[in-house]
Image (cartoon, rainbow, N blue to C red; front, side):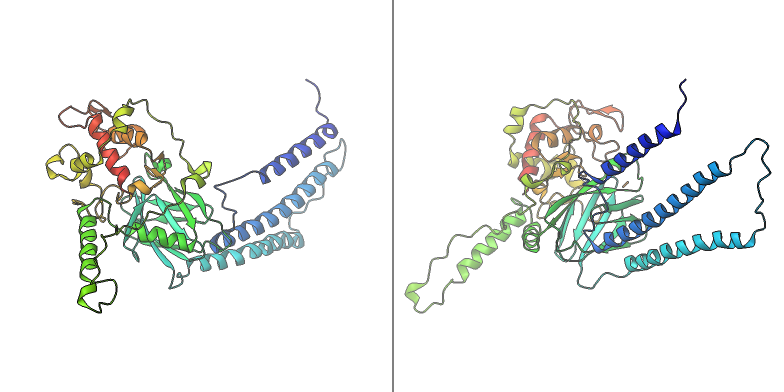
Length: 436
Ligand code: CUA
C-alpha cells in the first residue's frame, strides 16, 4: 500500500472541503429556514449565525492548537518526560472562563429571542386556528367563518396568530420559510405568530408535520400561499360562501332575487316609471385562488400513483348532479357515507366541523392538492383516491370504497353490495370538482 504523505494530501483535502462549502451555499432551497421572511425567522437566523461564527472560531483555534501540539510535543526517542500541568490554577481558570464568556454571548440573544417568540401576538393579528388530525391539517379563520384544509392563505404584511390544537396525537406545525416549529399538544392550546414581510412576493410554500404521529406522519403536509392583501380579501370573500349548487346557495340566490324585485334600483318619482327588476345575479363571488400556473415545481405533488385501473371515458362523463344525489340523499348513506365524515357548507350535514373526521369540502374544487398535500387535485387521482384511499396513503381514515378493491386496513375486499362502482365514483368526482 502506498504511503500517504501529509504534504500531498493536505492541499487536496482543503480544496475538497472548500468546494463542498461553496456548493452548500448555492442552489435553490425551497424548504430552507434561513429565509428571513418573518420576524420569527429573523430571530432564529440571527442565533444560528452567531452560533456558527463563535463555533467556527472555537473550532479553528482548538484545531490549530491541537495540530501544533501534536507535532511540536510528539514523543521523541529518549526525550524527557513532558511537563505536567495538573493543578495549574491560572490555566484552569482561563479555560473555564473563556467558554463561559462565549456561552454568555450565545445565551443572551437566545433567551431574548425565546421571550420575544413567546410574547402574545398583537391584538389586530389575523387569527388562524390550526387543528392537527391523523394525517391532515384543518385551518379555520374564525373572523371570517372559514374552515378549510391543507391549504393555508396568508396576507403579506399582516401578522398572523396561529392557535395550535390536535384532535388526536401530537403533531408539530412548521412552514420552514416562515416559521415554526411548534407542537400541537393534546388538551393544550399552543400559539405561534409571525408577520410575512412586506418585501415577500406572493409564493407557494411547503409546510409539514414535524413530530412523529404515526403511519402517515411523512404524508402530513400542507401548502401555504402568501398573497397580497387584495388577493387575500378576494379569497376570503369566496371561501366564506356556501357550496355552489347547495340548497343554501339556491336560497341565497332566491333571497337576492326577491330583494332586487322589492327594492327599485332608482328612486321612484312617478308610478309610471317603476323599473323592471333585473334578473338576480349569482351571489357567489368568483373563486380566487393562488394561480395554478404560478405554482413552483416543488409545490406540485409527484407522489407515485397506484396501478388501479379507472375508465377515463367514465371520468369524462361524470355527472355532478348524480354525484351530489349519491352523497346527499340519506338513502345512499350505506354505500356513500361521505357526509358522515365531511362537511360541505350549505348542504345536508351529518357531521360538524367539530367532529368531522375528514376535511371540510365546501370549496374542494378550488384546492390545488388533496390528501394533505400528497396528490394533485385532478379527476383521475381523485377517482383512484375514492376507490382505495388506504392503498395510496398508509393508515388513511378514509376507507376503501371501490367494489372489489382490497382494503389494506381491514384486509378485506369491498363486496359489490357495499361499494361504489366506477360510474358512481366518476359522478362523485364530478360533484366534488364542481365545488369551486
Ligand atoms: Cu402529524 Cu407528524
